Image (cartoon, rainbow over all chains, first blue to last red; front, side, top):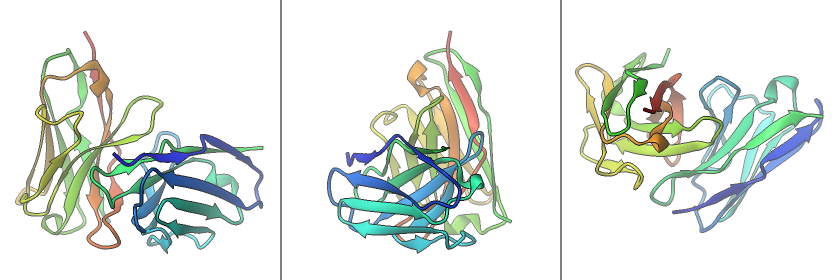
Amino acid sequence: DTVLTQSPALAVSPGERVTISCRASESVSTLMHWYQQKPGQQPKLLIYKASNLASGVPARFSGSGSGTDFTFTIDPVEADDIATYYCHQSWNSPPTFGGGTKLELK
Amino acid sequence: EVQLVESGGGLVQPGRSLKLSCAASGFTFSNYGMNWIRQAPGKGLEWVASISSSSSYIYYADTVKGRFTISRDNAKNTLYLQMTSLRSEDTALYYCARRVNYGGYPMDAWGQGASVTVSS
């Protein structure tokens, strides 16, 4: 299975730029997607196919990458962005998720 | 508004069975592939199973293959997950999620989840 590795946690202040990385154990082409999950809520799709903004998602969110290295950026961070962010690849079978990066306030 | 509502969760003893349902509304259910994703308490997301729009293609995670069955009834706009031979490690919140038909098949709509606890 394709293993997706994310940093477990990041501390940020509102107004800052934050970048979350996701490294795949093998190429996933550009089929990497990013989700936001707030406590007690279901995941929400933010970015699909590495860099495409999902419908209704603010332009503060962006993504980039291909192959094995991907980044997800929030610029600027708002207090409401405090959540856990997951990457998800759909190029290789089975589809897999990263372990999640928990964004915390400094 | 796209809505997915799971039901059927609960507390079940190891080795027993449980069937989850996911009622879909606000979109043409028969046009979309669907997934079950689970999340163990305090843990990350794990893909469980997928089914294509017409049920022609079905896939399972190795951890549930042979024990779980995904199915759908397009006339009733409902997705199912039949779970048998349940184990303690199946304890999780089970989400149904719609698979987008473009962009590499991400999941653009999720239900609130159905809680399954396997314990004696």
